[in-house]
Image 1: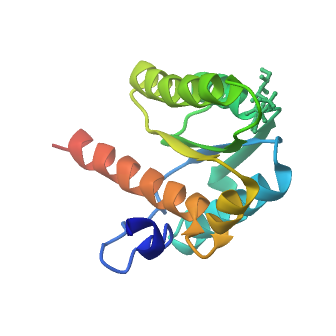
Image 2: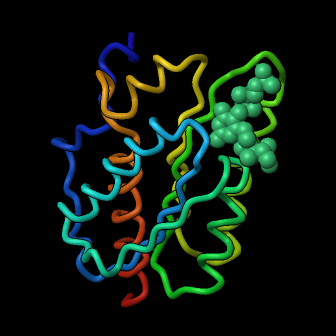
Length: 165
Ligand SMILES: Nc1c(NC[C@H](O)[C@H](O)[C@H](O)CO)[nH]c(=O)[nH]c1=O
Ligand SMILES: CC(=O)[C@@H](O)COP(=O)(O)O
């Protein structure tokens, strides 16, 4: 199964541009803090490992994943950034609340990205249970925070290249 082979942090088959020129916001949901903290650690370290300066990383916490996209909007409105990484973990409960949150964040991130013409990265785990989240926040399937950071750098670099076109 594809899932068994998945590693969200394996970029050995791709080239990652230098992040040195870029400034990124990171918005982190406080819900499921153990998981989102691991996602944040992966994302932050991946940005640093790929050349982003610590002074160019701006981190803010929001209560839950539903607030990630308004957090991204506030950041892009008030700071000169090359992109925003949204990190969250939504775990299915007893009701359909899960569905509404996941759809709101996915659609919201897209809308904010288009509004500011800046990448807004969907670094949100949407899982059936906590174990699936653990597996994707530094566990056997890697770290979605790493994936989100690499995606942010790649998108910022694409935009920078086209600006000089
Ligand atoms: N159940 C989860 C939530 N719920 C909270 C919402 O994100 C939101 O903060 C609330 O509805 C108020 O607007 N958030 C998560 O990030 N993960 C969950 O599993
Ligand atoms: C995704 C959620 O909001 C969820 O954790 C809340 O649980 P429930 O659906 O049982 O109210």
